Amino acid sequence: TLLCDELPNYRQHLTNSAQNPTELRQLAHKLRGAAACCQAKSLQTHAGLLEDMLIGQQAVDHDVIASLTQTLIAAIDNTINERGCQTSGYQPAYTEDKQNETY
Image (cartoon, rainbow, N blue to C red; front, side):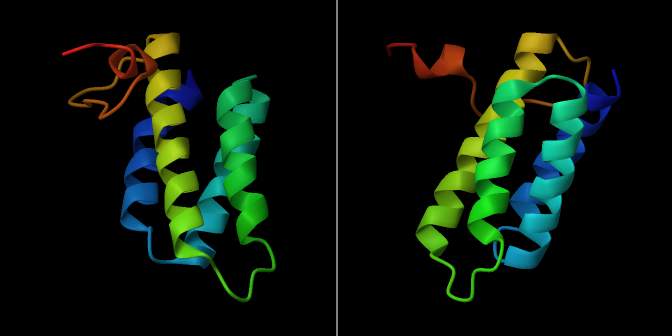
């Protein structure tokens, strides 16, 4: 699907935009809409949380934003895994399956 094709790009842009609140908000907004169209509820929720935190913020809490961004990236990885997206050369850093593994 189109969402599967775009998720690795969103992930990369989120990683590269970590210090730019305006760009993060725009990415979260776009991803929230794309997720809503494709009924990816978890992804939509996490993108919305990040977007909402960044709307109208004069003083941005960088720790909270970093945490929400990492959670959104994890949601992207999980969506790719759950939907069986075929992404060439993509290796997710985190999935729920890995979270539950014991070493």
